[in-house]
Image (cartoon, rainbow, N blue to C red; front, side, top):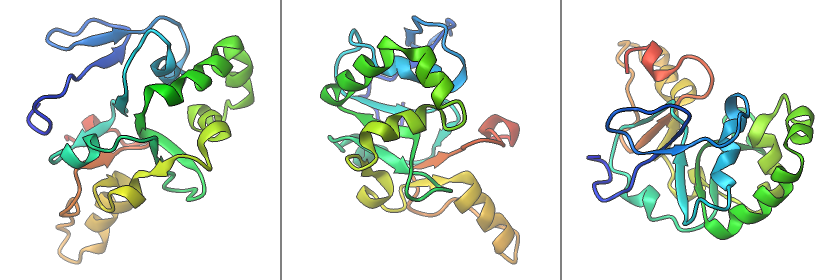
Length: 180
């Protein structure tokens, strides 16, 4: 991949895709809950995770060099976490899995509205670094930064902020729905 040439990219998914290395899903958890499989003990090493609806638009060297627990500050709830992009050290994942694996249905029911992000906030709200503080301007929101620029720019030529490396698409639209 041109934005991080030596990386071992993998896709956490339940289908085979030609030319894509995958980590097969082992459980049948719906929607965003499948992301909890990142915490399985048989997946070793630290992980830089990005949702599938994330667009990489620049060099990832700075982002990949972060070696501590990092999540996004939620775009709409600045006091909360957003799990669109996470740096997950192996040592931080074990306690999450231990709690989750004992009663996944309980947690899915309890956090049916807040999802995996609300579950992770139980553990990491006060502990996780925020990408926006570590690397200001490198991780941006399509809705709050790029799309807003399209409407705020009098010429109608809004664009990706110059320092952005990753554009997060949280909710609708998805990148493939707008031709990205």
